[in-house]
Image (cartoon, rainbow, N blue to C red; front, side, top):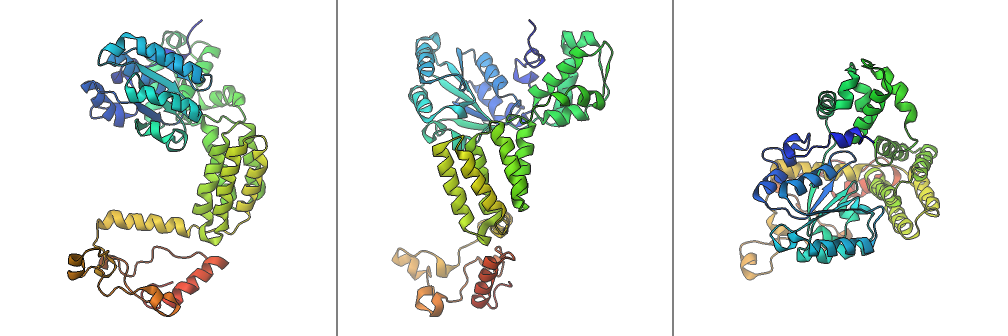
Length: 424
């Protein structure tokens, strides 16, 4: 039985590898490490189909190390320990080239499973390479993460995907024999969502079902491929499209659409923590001080669904989603930090005004640190007008309250205090 096209075209060297030039290009960090023979434990983080597994295989081949692999979906602590014992007994243990243990979808490992890896990584019995589509800051235990170099992989660009299709038409014997003509690529690129494996799977489906010499057009792609698209592909384009629709529905104060997209994700098997994390972000980004309780509700939701899990977590998620959708909205806090960070990048390390500097020593006090500082609680209404920004940014209002009852009250509070410095 023939291997899938994506497997037949899998690169064997960094020179054959398309995309991720920030890692594998002439000055890429990964290429430099392989050249020097230094391979740390690594976490590859990126969306599906961007070459995480391929890079792990290339590292193993290039470094000539024993290579062990596990899938977090089907492996448990027992499997991890068995592989570690094999690695310890391998010839690589007695050279500078310790074995590589590749774990696909490492974010699916529980804490206890990840703990079982820690000793082997610390003692150098294995060099760990993990692949994940989820943020490792949330999904990999801190002790293990601190011992790994995290490399971020990006979705393939359109040029990379087209180059991949051209490589298939030139180098793959089965595709070459069909002599298809690639007339249009827009539909293939859009349906692939930057996932190279998905692109090649679709292309192979088209080519193997087509007559010799067929022209591949957008119309043909939609006719043959889109009708087979699943309701929700949590590892592909649908994952990003539906979470986008979900967030925008809540932001747009439509609880009906929001709970529909929630149902789509639940029925599609989406990770409950992924959904809850997005609600936490939204509670600050899109609601903020218009309703500070939104963040409390979202945080409690995250804690609750993490403990309970599906199917009961769907009820808690629904309550949170409908609450956030029907809450007043404001992105004032989000815009404030964006503008403040932009100012920092433009102006650099500006000096802290002397009155508000810390003065723990006599010398610091003698040179003016903390001089003329006004302790707010010593003044009426616990307020004394003073300068807290660097001189170069005097009068800059990064935070501008939104137009809603709570933030209107904040605006009035600020107006009464800052009568001349800021304009609200």
